[in-house]
Image (cartoon, rainbow over all chains, first blue to last red; front, side):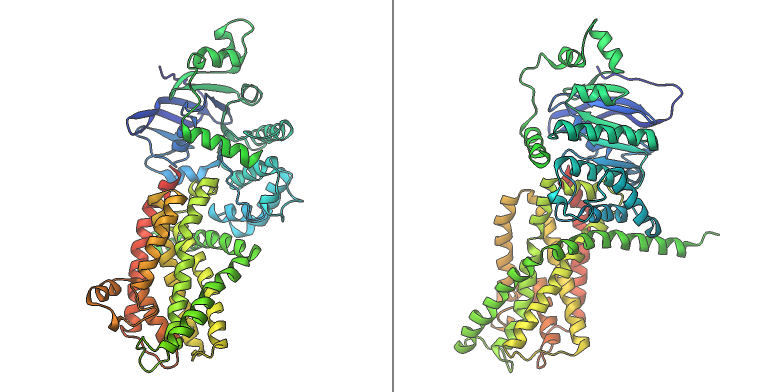
Length: 274
Length: 267
């Protein structure tokens, strides 16, 4: 059954109401009702094919919902998608930086697309490069960056217009442990420095535990549980880990692992960043 | 009372910035790797030197007062622009597969600005083709008109034609969605557009049914305008005004279709 959590006093920056998406006769996201508070890091976990990427596509307005709706940073994804896009940053699972452009040029492209005033562009780009430790590599083509550098560049691109909400689709897939920890540090830094609300999807329980204030577990398109890591573990039993929580919900479906598109996307992402 | 004019001006400036952002990114890529300009120069050279050289001797195509090489040059320019622009769709599919397209689609830029930005970058690529063909034509002794106004007119027509065919290509890419299908369809479309036009022979010598197809083909109007502006001894068959009007109207229709279809590539 779809779960609902309703914090009473905090401002909600992501709010979905019975959000659903069908592909042909298959319901991939099924009546998800979810609320993310301002300044929160919210993790969405689930196996391949659980519907995480489809849910994220609806929140980023890349895909219209079949039923229900969502408000992101105060704007409705159905009725005002441009306002939603103005207020969000998005780091997709696939490589979104253009390898044929330098790091600086990728940032310049984003600065122009988000209409950052010309007088502020240079300083914003300098700050973003500094924040993501890419200043020295700024004039090198992105195709010569390592996987970790590319992810940092994409985070810089997504944050250049200082969005209220940052949505990250499996941002550490394919990264080595050092690069993965660097991304975690940047995520925490963004929240601490700018108060950015962050929605992150991941397969890695370690990552969810390290980064997220609350976690939602998505299984077969339905939001099965929502809570803090401690609450979720306590619900399974003493000494339980997030892996145990995950297995308790999704473990009985041994054939899960997504369809052809999911597998192709994950493997392509691994190849791009690995 | 609100002042609509400054608001409209600001929106126009913002829209221009977004169109330029997309076009500038493509132009920067071309600057980083200009080898494409050289490789694309080979095809018009082959057509002009080999095909043109032989057909001029055959004297099988009535090109009026103009020599066949002169008649052919504007057609080959339009052809090289068409062939470069028609494969823009492949690049769009490639960008979708890589994930780069997501970066554009989650930005607040209107979809039409993204489409026009791609068209503008194609126009710049087309202009580099024009420089190559002009140099070739000068070397081959073709009677090129170097009047600055004519050169400006040629640049405008090339930009229009290039944007038109690249947008058409983008629409095909949005429909077929995979590189494999696009490669097949790209070939199937390019050849009829080229041969059912006045690029390498006059419309007068075509069979009746092909004349009708040719009149509905935007490449015909591009070549007609180019022939009038590029050559000293030629004039437009349809009138330059009609040539430009047809290209502008078709481009506007294609941009509006592409604006609707482009977002579907990331769904």
